[in-house]
Each structure stands twice: as structure tokens, then as C-alpha cells.
Image (cartoon, rainbow, N blue to C red; front, top):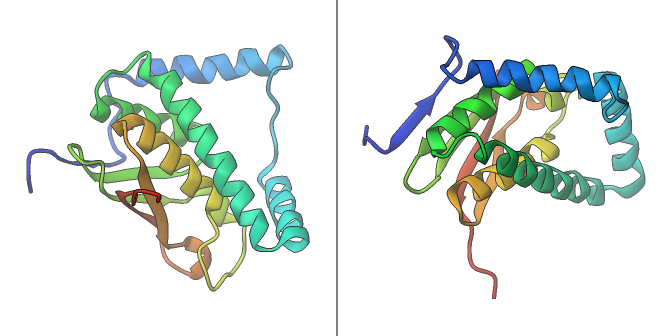
Length: 181
């Protein structure tokens, strides 16, 4: 495996975990100050399914676009603390695990940003119910925005496996985005 290829998995606490604990404490402050709220997973699923029922495939585009912007913003916030991509991915993995988004495992070429991301116990698929196609449009957009920002170039993310389809985890393929004409 080339040196530039990173396989970042769950496991032992990382050196930056204190920063993640600080981030989680800041959530407590945000909640206390009324600048954040908690949404139950079942409420998120109701929200998502109502949008799908009303807007069809347009709902998927909405979740994808919202996810992209959230991913870009999240990356910019973490880049103030972590300057190299590997530390940035470690911090994202630990933060999302702490926020109960799932267990993110990055299998990426650190030079190109391409590869795959596996998400075990992903929140978006966990309560969705059975589906014949992938359902994690927000997570897909989030990863696309975050990784594009982290690697400083447009990347494309596509969900290739989904828990809602009966797979044991969700898998996202990351490739270089094609230039738009």
C-alpha cells in the first residue's frame, strides 16, 4: 500500500481527542444558550420521508446540497485547528462518532483525495427502513463538501452500499469531479 494512502479506522483515542471533547462541551453551551437544538432520529426520518413524498427526487437534491454546504463549513471550522489532512480526517471521525453520526472509516489516497469512506451504524440509514437504493444523501453531500474543502479541489462522492439496502455498512466512493463545460 503506498505511503500516501491512509486507512483511518475507529479504535483507540487519538491525540486530538481532547479537542473533540472540547467540541462536545461547546454543544452543551450552544444548547444552554439556545443556539442549538436536539432532534430525535425518528423526527429526522419523518422530516426526510415527508420531503421525499412531497418532492420526490428533488428531496434527494435538497439533502445533498444542504449536506455539501454543512461539510464545507465543518471542514473550514476544523482547519483552524488541524492543518494536515490526516489529522483533519481523524478529528472528523472522532467528532462524528461523538455526535452519533456513525463510525467513519476513511480509505483515501492522501495525495489525491480519492478512495472510499465506510460508515458503520450511520444515522441516516439506521432508522430509514428497507430500500432498494442508497438513502444517505445528506451524509453523501457532507462528505463531498468536507473532502473537497480538505483536499482543495472538487471531489465527487457516490454512495455505493447502504445499510438500508441490507449491507452491513454504508460505503461512499470518492473520485475526482469531472470539469463542467
